[in-house]
Length: 592
Ligand SMILES: Nc1ncnc2c1ncn2[C@@H]1O[C@H](COP(=O)(O)OP(=O)(O)OP(=O)(O)O)[C@@H](O)[C@H]1O
Ligand SMILES: [Mg+2]
Picture 1 (cartoon, helix red, strand yellow):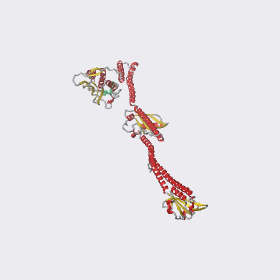
Picture 2: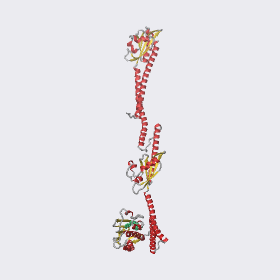
Picture 3: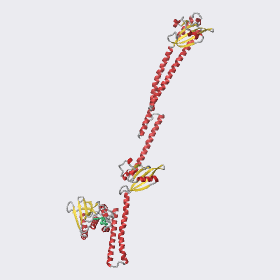
Picture 4: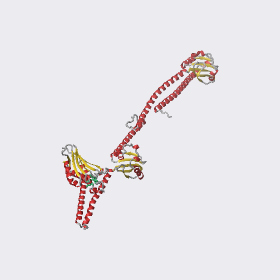
């Protein structure tokens, strides 16, 4: 396990170590050098003085008494050097001393104490000496007369003076060291803070950036490497923030473009994984509620997987028409997505072409129906005119009958063309409708009168009834009386055509305060429930094989619906097969 040690701790530990070590070594070296120096100086001093005095005090070791002058010199030196001074003869006998150590006079030194100096060499010694209780610096200078050593001058000064000085100096060094330690620690602390502070700030900033927060910058306090690093990090944050903002903006733009278009857009990876789908595509495919990560290409109600696989293999735009739901046709364009020439997936564009498809079908059907309906009477006319022309029909009655048929077919043709024109006008909105206030009851009575004889001839009872809040009141609507009569005529024409002898047809008006319902109910053959929704469509004929249907063109109800819708109303049809049918419309009642 690695222990986390902060830069600060490391810096401070190094500071302490370096100061303690250097000051310790310095202290030890310095005090030992100092004491060495002091000792050497003391020895030199003793030696030089001793050598100077030796000549003067020579007489004593030769057995002569010390002159007054010589004694003075000895005393002076002793005082000046703070030293005990002894004169010793060849045999080791202390013959004279300075006044501070007269108690030693007449004593004899041990051989080992003086044998070396008696050989003619100067002896220096430090440390304990047998005669004194404390450590001493001892210097012994031989006294020579001619070539002979006749005695020696011994000088002793106590070591304590020097060691005290050294101790004192050492204490000073120690105190100075402590002071230096404290100061250097404070400096180290400050320094480490000036390093770790900015580092901390930079670390915090970097961590914030990893969380996507870019607002902050590190303060630049110094112009050193840390300052440069801080500036670089600030610049990095700024650039990152700007790039991310740019990216976000691009993404938003892309999103708004893609969600703004009417087409559905789906992005698919090379592995046929769904990467992205816009709301239009969700709507078209009816998968609005499923989250993207749970949506699979396989689950979509269309063979989009095939399309994307095809695009992935061919690398080209592929088009596919699919019908995921009844009455819905989607056109899917799959195009490859390339990144640096490499195919990475595909984009599928979904277009709802149901309406276009429906219109196209309608137009085609309409054209087919129109030509068919036109051809029938024309064929018939040609069929009857030919024999008349080539003279195969000679008998007058048959000629008359043939001509009658030709006239009927021509009439039918012109009616058909009128109907088609009406329908075209209704659809293009160019049918002229002149709105007037009219009493709908009058309209009903008028058509009843028109169809009365026909009904009577077919043995059908034709009745009318009016139901309104107030009996006998006018029931006014705002409309075109010719056009509304055309609607009622269509209804009655159909009713008469599909009702057998002995049947009953009722034209009724039901008025409330705000609206009017006009109905034509018959007791005829009725219409199949499946066929009922389609009776209003152009050219629709319920039973194409039936003789009665054959006569019509299937445009009457379509025109009627167009007229009523132009009046702001609505048409309806109900039927019980075998029991009859009811056709009618609802329009607003005009305010009186
Ligand atoms: N009262 C009704 N009873 C039974 N079927 C009806 C009735 N009215 C309409 N239909 C059915 O609806 C179809 C469409 O009627 P529509 O009036 O539009 O055409 P049509 O009567 O055949 O021809 P047109 O009115 O153009 O001469 C008819 O062919 C018929 O099959
Ligand atoms: Mg009709």
